[in-house]
Length: 190
Ligand SMILES: [Zn+2]
Image (cartoon, rainbow, N blue to C red; front, top):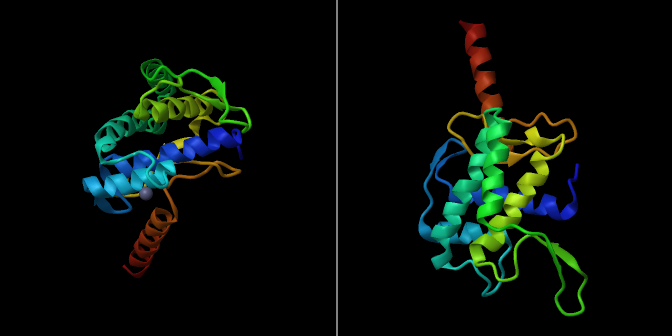
């Protein structure tokens, strides 16, 4: 399933950024990355190459943005679409998200969701908030979620055909399956 290829890419980057930069639990362990770890995973999430930002000095602001974006997934997971949509509307206003077609040199025109003079963090947060708005504004709105495995609160977007995903990834899916298997075996032998 594809919302549209650009939006899907930005939703995926949003998930990666939230999971990299928000503290909590990941796949059964505490998630409390160091500043250096946060920078390297943020660069990966945003596809930064060479001397492109983010740099270490961007990490605190990016982490704050990730925390604001994370709230959307939490509201959807709790079944509170009203709160999710109102929160996204707030982010769209705060980041001054605005569609604008632009091109670099002779390259193809493409759609940006931030003003050309936006600072670095809003230049990401605005399109990320927009991508979540696109998801929330269509029938697949409930496909944002928070992992339901024990000791994990990483977020995900479910792009599967049937939309039955409950975990952040196969690690947590396998952890839960293994625990269920152990429980059944313990119950059977008891
Ligand atoms: Zn998980």
